[in-house]
Image 1: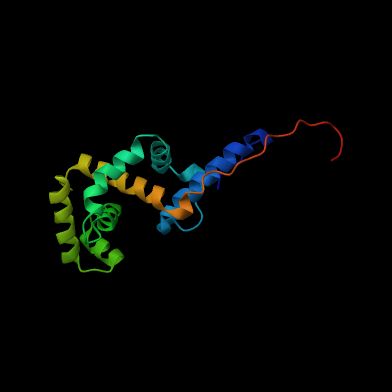
Image 2 (image 1 turned 60 degrees about the horizontal axis):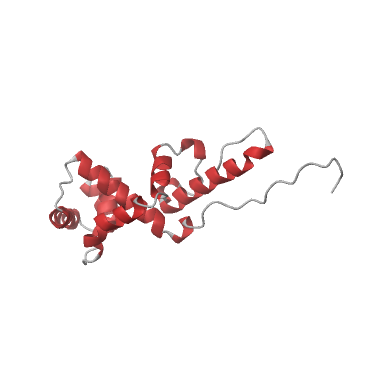
Length: 158
């Protein structure tokens, strides 16, 4: 849902915000189907970054080694980061044993040569996971609605 505007000329902005909120809600089922634009916070920053020419390709390049291997490593990494590093919560979300999550996250660290205890590595990986998820979600790719240019008021009834 976009923020209300005082005049009709703010309608395009409101609809753009609503499209952003819908795109985020579609890619993040835990928020449900209703998300307000004025409560997007840092997610709005991610959307803006993801719209640049370099951010999404860089995110894909970072995660590419994981996509080429069996074991659902990207989804495991994403769930792990979304859970704040909780093995138990990640295991519950994915429907696997926590030892499976441990093995997968250790594989991720070896393959990408990162450590998930390092905050910079976690941030980069989390942003990459979110960006790729947003870009790959067909429900999130519709983009903002297009508006016809407003017609000048003539004073006559249409």
